[in-house]
Amino acid sequence: MMSLKKKLKIKNMNFLNLNDNIFIKYLKIFLKNLKGPLPNWKSIELSKNKNKIINNRKENILIPVSAGGLENILVFESMIGSILKYEGFNVDYLLCDEFLPACVMATNNKIGNADFNQHGSKKICSYCFLRAKNYLESTGAKVLKFSDFISKEELKIIDDKNFNKLSISEIKDYKIDEILVGEHANSGTIRYFSSSDFHNYKYANEIMAKYLRSSIITKKVIENVLKNKKYKEVFINHGIYVPQGVILDVANNFKINTTTWMIGYRRNSFILSRGDTYHRTLVYDDNSKWENIEFTKKHENKIDNYLRSRWTGSTDWEFYFKNPKFNALDYFKKNNISINKPIIGLATNVQWDAQVSFPTNFFSNMLEWLFHTIDYFIENQHLQLIIRIHPAELNISKHSLQRAEVDIKKKYGELPKNILIIKPGDNISTYSIFDKCNCVIVYGSKIGSETAATNIPTVVCGESLIRNKGVAIDINSKDQYDKFLNSLPLQKNFISKEKLIRAKKYAYHFWFRKTMEFKSIYENNIYKGVSLQINKDLFKLYDEKKDLALVETINSIINGTDYILKDEKQISENFKGSRY
Image (cartoon, rainbow, N blue to C red):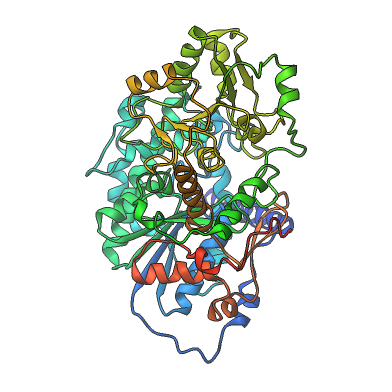
């Protein structure tokens, strides 16, 4: 038998290890706060109207932040939750408390494959949960934990299953009660590897199995949360990946109103959608929401000015080039592109980002479409093709392991002279190049909304948001695509005046109505920790209706309506470029 002295020694060692673990967590939190602290709610709450009569609605709102390490998401959701509390709702936040073996926080540049295979997300968990919990509790709201909503027995049933024996395709197709846990596991794995072609990476199968296990655990957790309390609304970021995508699907199964949201492109802007991720809702949305809005010359000037500002990124969160070059003719001359032969532009999208299923897609993925297009231009060298690879493949925070240029090189070796690849790091302006093209072909790139609205014929072969809007050439099959390619080049003045105005109207709707600018949010230096902060006069701005996007968001939650800012009613506040 073990002696009492030895037992005490082991007990003391465990206690020391526990203390060391807590010390390391708080040290990491301290260092992160030095880089950029989260908003101070004691200061913000001073702006509350003490005479405001709170309407005790006795209704519950669930905000499943889930991954507390996503700091900008944490800040925005704390703002929405605090205003909902101010309006008399009971608000619960839900956090993963170091419970899931894999989640949206994990990326290959943060955790190596071998480490992730052995330890899962633990390296990130060390600061993610504790910091987020302390912050959210400072708002006065209740924080729910994943581990409190799944029993040991329920967890054992999941843990007893050996998902490592499943193939990648079997994991991807895995469903439970019509919840596509396998699809979300696939999206999460693609995001982790920054590659849709992750199958040959070391530990790919084991890592995808971790995401499947996390998806199934999340399903059980959120089911128990929703059975435990009746919620009016589930307000969730992303709406895809693990755990957010699973939470959304389960909440929809419970017939609860759901909202998904994500940071927009313009500074201080956010996109909110009903019932599904905006990647899908924008593609299949009802055109009656925008096609009959007032659209005068002032509105047209506003969208024209904004789209022009995107050439330099002066009003956007992120811009990929410090010194973009705009002389397309010089670039053509340098790269042996003839202006006397038709030039067709093609814009790729990042292959690993937001990989969800679209029922109308007829190519299996962007790469198949890209290769199909290249094959055509190899056989038809009277036409020139310029492929603009998405600059986000060299994103400062998350480099893509899958590069379109590498995929093309692997398949074709050297391309003929009529096909030019613009690399992601090349600082020639995409807009200046496409401005000289006969037409532009896109798969899922959002640049299609810009080209269509600037009188460039635009062709949609995938899930671009301008599909189904009557502003582009929508391709619905490979046969139709081949017929379109055979019709190139398009005639001059291909776009009618009426169609151009319609394209501008949709662009205005997307960039200024569906994308809402919040005046209660401001931006710190993105390179110094938390880049989003909340205006200390938050509640005053809300009470005085000076943040119309925030007012619209709260009203939409109260009424269960879609999120559309009636920007056209405030056109006197004209867009004049960057305020920074």
